[in-house]
Image 1 (cartoon, helix red, strand yellow):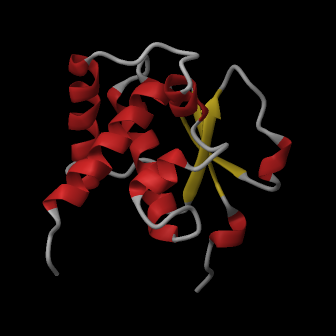
Image 2 (cartoon, rainbow, N blue to C red):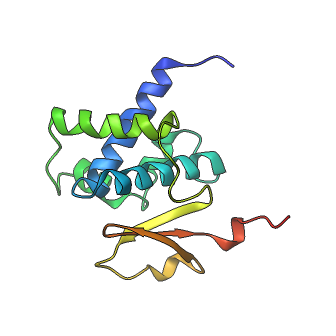
Length: 141
């Protein structure tokens, strides 16, 4: 397998933006959870052909869209670099996966689970983020 450093850098930049947009006030564990959701969606193959496609898919990571459309301020270079280091830890599997490989959804506990998600089961809570897994994607052996 050939490692594409340019693709990895683009992936990490997109993950960093999503981590900042969705969890910049949360703990490192919650940030790892957000990054893992992104990787889970990418590995699933139904959410995009690249990590950037997963992050930029319309209607998915609202915080990213809020930054891109000017609703929220663009993060500083320093803040993005900090989140890129978090993304790096998850991308290269340097930290434990706290949410599992079939967890594709999360939201802040200050809002209700969107009805559009259908049947999703809460997997875990890290700080203010609730993570959900999809029973339909779980395989029984």
